[in-house]
View 1 (cartoon, helix red, strand yellow):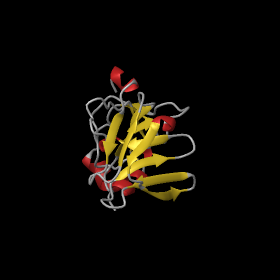
View 2 (cartoon, rainbow, N blue to C red):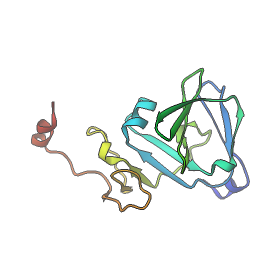
View 3 (cartoon, one colour):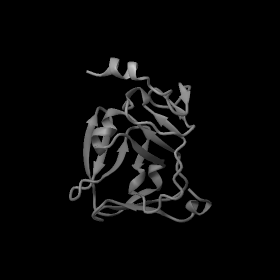
View 4 (cartoon, one colour):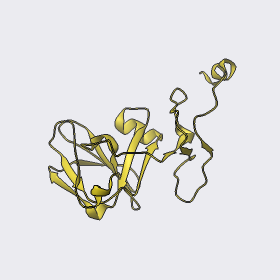
Length: 158
């Protein structure tokens, strides 16, 4: 996010507009998550999150529906249009990046849960990749996976 994000609110909303929110300050981190839970919550091959300080966040319209997706994890979505809004556990509050009104300042800095990354998805960036979460761990690689040979692909097929 830009320098002005420290004094101006960053705003976002769901698809239908029933849920609107804002937060202040720069994100703590921005990432691509490849875990199965995030894929299922969004029906997409990966999710991009903007982790923010929850004390600077507030809903300005509506209240999303909360779902306990696993022990200690709550995911929220709009009850009308179904748009996913946020992921929360005891350590972080993460907004789905595409709920933000302006994505021009969103710059992911790493990939998490690449152990669960789909074999047919590759993102050609040089960002660090972490087997699971990134906190306190060392990246297992940087940049895209090596191309899979046809022989390896057939061996992985069911």
